[in-house]
Image (cartoon, rainbow, N blue to C red; front, side):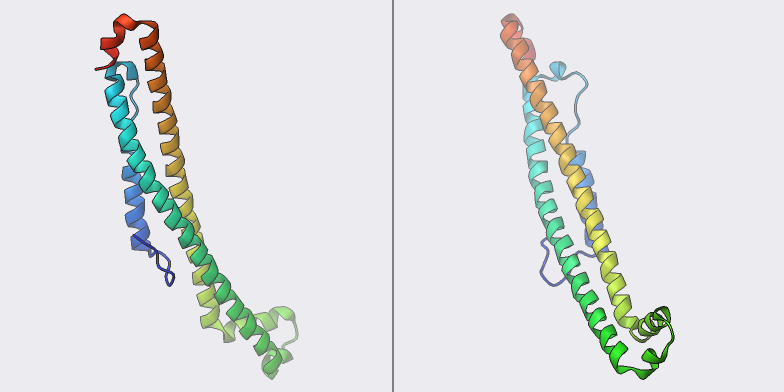
Length: 173
């Protein structure tokens, strides 16, 4: 799923990608006793894990683009609201006549309700995009830890093979 420059990910698109991230996280399960499964099985798991890591990296890149796009949209909406509220403050006699800054702000917010709603929706989109990015990064880190663990298991088995060469056939199942 490629992100365009015009729109952030929808809730449905995020849900699809979150489901994919869950499947990728579960694509490799570590064994309690890797010596029993042998190097071939560990190497197979490493290959599957690398494919999962590549896909998660692509999702993380899309999530970064998505968050940046959501932030740019929020900045644009906020600037529009600020510009309109400043203009309203100086051009509307009704707003200027209000006695306190809080009343003037409330009057402006009421007058620009649609623009304010757009700002709040954009802010919510930034929050969702940030949450999605954090989830994708967490899956990436989880897969990195699994990769490190499998590499350590491979190293340990190779060391045992070198120390006990008569057991070589036992470990290379």
